[in-house]
Image (cartoon, rainbow, N blue to C red):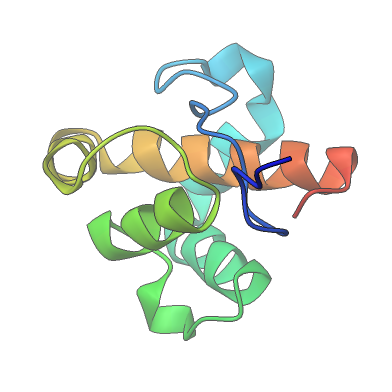
Length: 104
């Protein structure tokens, strides 16, 4: 029997919510809207990164790579540039869902 996946790796997937799925978690969206730096710090803390790194394309790319989420650095850049709040909230929702599933 051939081993096709290394232990601890994740099958390719997509983000569990869409970029504009605000209604999936209104609390996260309000958190991001009213205290955006705090949301970024929360994401960075959950990923054991520096609090200054929790917002934008770099943290999104690191997260996508870590959990084998489909996409590209170009798409991360576009999402973070044109809809920073949306992309940051999407990342937080995905982290929360993975925590609930026990795979974070």
